[in-house]
Image (cartoon, rainbow, N blue to C red):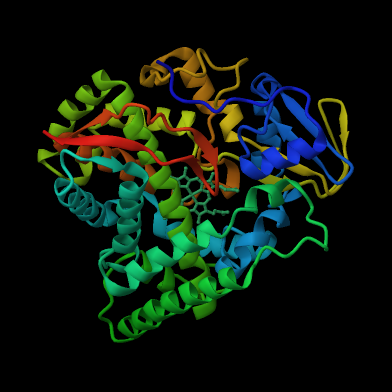
Length: 449
Ligand code: HEM
């Protein structure tokens, strides 16, 4: 049995139908041939965008000339009320300064410091799930809760049960449910007459979330001032001055950053973990191997994570098949020539981890689940050139190292304690929302070992 993949649309459809499909879901709106194309042009009377699906082109845009291809403002539209000037949305000098302050908090050595908090979150997840043993559960719910817990414990040293943390979590969920147009907006310069994305509810929700985060930050600023602050990510980021200007983040700018850490850090990991659990139920032989390997976590030190190698290979394969961020959009700031075609200034350049990870001309058996591929020649080459779940170049995900510890750790802890089994007639269908999710959730039976 192959891992679920959305059905592609027929090659030729009317523009109207295309837009309708798009609105429904980004993935099934695309034709099958994109999995073989190096590049595709979407030309309509309203907009022009280009999907690039060739490693050399992706390298040019993300790694060699990132300044010429800044983040597209269209993505920002829907997220701005919530994320303000967060590092996810800014460009140019502001973005560079923000990364200088944030990056040190995620450096290799710091990961070791955040590990105990991650482990506590994993243990708390196991305890919660014991209460549901024997039942059919919705996995995205479980992994969202766990990933949100990881973020709060590592950022602010509080668990998700903390009153403010729980409220932020709830309100973020409501916010995301109100963002259905995000996909469409990414590709189409939204004309002025289209009602703005930020409906009143969304705006109010964003304000509420920001007020809650502001409270946490004010409290933390007091603790820093009195020398009583815990040594977590929030303290590290709030006390790190920009090495070039000597300035730290102001309060508002810190609120922006915490909002993105929370959003980018829990949605993505939750999606990846839920798909991994589904794959484990689909391939029970792998599930058993991982469960046996997880016994090494008897010694739950940071170094134990380097020993759950199979878990990492499986998680990496899940990120290939179901990259949580399915597409990224950049804007051409000057006219370009790609593969002999003229790309006008202002064109939207779409980079699709979803399609690159399944590029039929590059990967052996691209639609198969095979965690052993990472030790083959083809797998190694593709990992270097055609594997970008965390993006690449200077704008690479700040949390990539963090996520590659968190994912395999949570996975190992869960499989050590539980077995996950398929439920009849509940095959999940991948759709692209803010991240790649299953259309009707991922339902599995959880059995205690
Ligand atoms: C499996 C988990 C994760 C995946 C697949 C993932 C993926 C990505 C991708 C693809 C981008 C680039 C988006 C773009 O350029 O449009 C990104 C950016 C970002 N991610 Fe992650 N991420 C994950 C976890 C995390 C975590 C745990 C954190 C923080 C705790 C985080 C923080 C960020 C931030 C701050 C950015 C913006 C970086 C910038 O634009 O300079 N991510 N992530």
